[in-house]
Image (cartoon, rainbow, N blue to C red; front, side, top):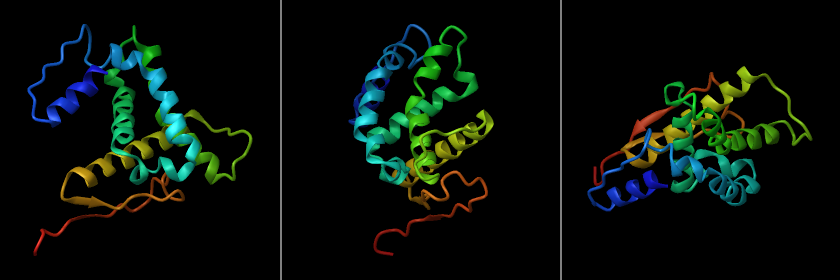
Length: 166
């Protein structure tokens, strides 16, 4: 929560310092994940697979999922906080599972290897990061579709937006 508040205050031009007992983002930010997960489920996951495509996510959910992706990085893991790290990635996992279920005709159950699931998570995280680039820079990155979101061989196109008036 503190990191999010600091981010938005900094966006408003305010000078911000974040002080945390341990690593930044591992305190209340991680502890409040349960409420965030419930809200994400209500606002996004229940709307279906298309709602979790990065190009359809509101900024706040795009940023929240990218924060979860940071927690998945092995260097972010602290052996004492490992359970909390896994708990905080439920939004990413939920989004990936919603898309997989839709791609497979909404079966009652889904089974896959952990390596396949991790591959899909990585594809989704890359798509989230590409969307953030598209929103924040003059580079447009072609968004994925439900059909090709997890395709590791998908050709990704990017181009600079033309300058206004040019």
